Length: 357
Image 1 (cartoon, rainbow, N blue to C red):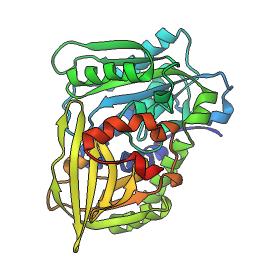
Image 2 (cartoon, rainbow, N blue to C red):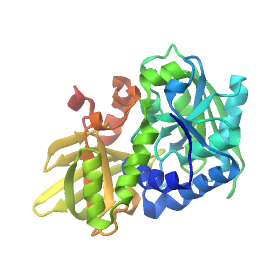
Image 3 (cartoon, helix red, strand yellow):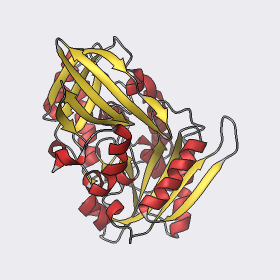
Image 4 (tube, one colour):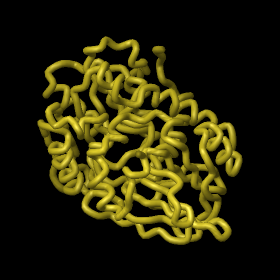
């Protein structure tokens, strides 16, 4: 499979990608920025989507992503920072990459990197749903400290302050700590790139087919509106509508590079409690666990059917909470790596890994 991405792919990729970001982004908070990135990418050059099977095993792939807190951060960040980070990484590697993947969808910044560097956008991702830490997008590298990588982050200091550019080399745990600190210094979010990885490594450890899944889900979502879109989404991901009700509390706040807290949605006499660490990490129904990362938990506005970000889930807002088992969407091995859970469990004050075993 090899084809050119176009305007007809952008809107489906946006709406489903925002839903699959697991509450980290929403139409009313991030759509304009993602849409601008996609339009800019398509205007710069053709963006070619290729499958992993079309790349040689030793072909070098890089990952384009963001590091930080998507909801409550106030970063100094511009779209060109993603291209700058990728260019710096390519210079460190010493060769032109054969392709780029996104950390997780929406991943429109990777469209921009593909267009700027003149390389294909690979139909894969570290994860096909949102994840909060670099390690969770590491495709299993958190348990392989013997494998070094390079991580680069960039911010041009567009609003105020001076530019931040960091190149870190080492295992993914050590270098991710440096990326996180850079995001804090940049107002909570920073553009980043990491690699190199071979196509065979991504094929074995990444979320192959994540972009095709994203676009097809988007077409299904756009075929309906309002409550009808909720059902279309549930059907496509073979999931469950956990709640269609009102937000009764949201105590999520920014803390040391992450959005952390709980959101509670009430339908009738039942409460769905959502644990947040940048994205939805678990869902409990009346105290009983019903979904745990990397199971997907996503949020739609009941009136419009649009994805809604955690930061916009104000008390009284009517939302639909949808879950899907991890087996029903593309998930990389990093999302199931036991080494990535302790830090998140400590911050949340909740158990995650035990529910996956």
